[in-house]
Image (cartoon, rainbow, N blue to C red; front, side, top):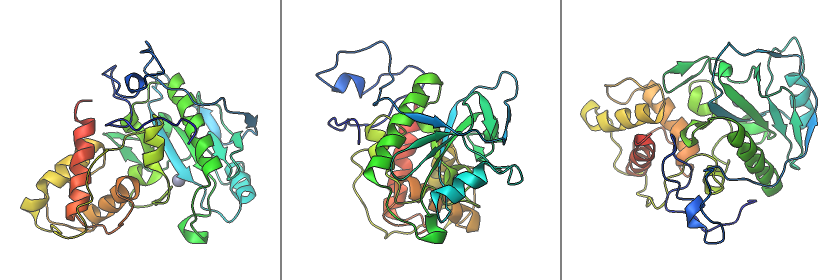
Length: 283
Ligand SMILES: [Zn+2]
């Protein structure tokens, strides 16, 4: 990744001007008034999409949604994101070689999230910035995101975060905000590395407790449900393991527990869910 520093105890920024473990953890860098970190400057090529609109008046831009393109080629994805009849778009596309295209200016609304929910908000296109990251996805041969591509993702995200009041907990996957429809950017996406660079949240130091100890009953699941809702997912407050909860658990695992996408509240998943909820708890 672009910014090599020792990982802090807790990766990511806090919301609302709280203490920042990253800025102060670097002995080479004195404490700065800004809690934002900076990556290398990003070279951006403009290739406008017609699929853009005004945002609702006064709407904050406070969510960053990461996607994969999920098409066979980058060009096919770019063509679709610029096709008036497809009516989809994103603010940026990042190719596998790290090249960055801007299709929609950040102050305008792009159409990337669809039906979505996060932390009580729906219609997330209104308030989010969307980045499409080129990868064929689960349908066409899901593969690792090259390091040069991830460096570009990190640097672009840092620039976006420097311009908008987007908290670490609001840097999310498409699958987080639409778990019943979407799997992107998926379990191969390096959320941990991004968080080390100051993009998004990651609970450091949670030991892998494995896939045993699966909980299925309502009483046992109540803290998991409560924690998932606190993180931002749409989760019913009560009930045994059902399909809806399994779907949200898979989304959580793709982001924060990528080693085992089971849809089960096993020991390892439960530990991570509670750890992420604790990270966001002060925000
Ligand atoms: Zn998507």
